[in-house]
Image (cartoon, rainbow, N blue to C red; front, side, top):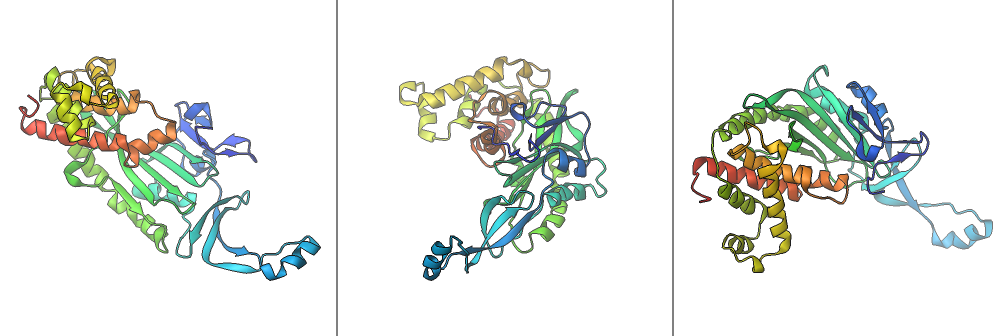
Length: 353
């Protein structure tokens, strides 16, 4: 089950929903209208709660008596360790420490609702649970667009993920997605983080309730990105410069990059060569790139890299793709490298001559 979407045996349904678009691997529920947070919780199969319960082990001194009666009764509590349990089916999701605080699924949706006050304007587009339900994720569409040129639109999303197994923080991130080719545009703008990370500590719920204040940065990022991208549509770039920019973005090994750009391909891994060749072909010939605000522009070169990772590169499964693009993986790292290189090129168009 490479999709890793949780299957609820009690309801005989997969824990995932999507608005209008086909869900992962055709699994889960597709709905025609944007739901409220309460409806989304049910559609995604996330309407369960999680409890933190003490852990116990057996007393070896009474082992013989237990074996004689056939009844084993745990008698010794394991100090400072607890199990996280789904209360609907008593499934163990993980083992956590004494300071860990469970953040319920409903609280994750409440976080998004709180960003816009009453909840008006937030559009829940996808949500789901992975594996046994220990990790959940939500994407919500924000009002408005990032408009580049006349008709190249980028939608604004908030993405949130949290877990019930003790691994990973609660993470909420601003994630713009270009409509024309569905690119996730990762950009490190002025060294600002576009994500909020919250530990599952004793005050996690309170911090979660206040995190929407920090997410006000999404509006600032959207305005800043719009200005930068519109400027990039006015910056012309040659095919040769596009190739060099892609190589510089995708090949993190400086020695390999130098050999590639010197034409010494025998000394460069075929992995890097194929990646650069494929990304360059996408940037120069894919129909989504032949756009009035994209073709021959610096904005197009940037989208060549992000589009490669979004639409062309192969991943083990959708979960791996998600991690690569939003959890600091290769796609996010290389897309941010492309953003920084494009920013340099906009200031000095001779750097890739």
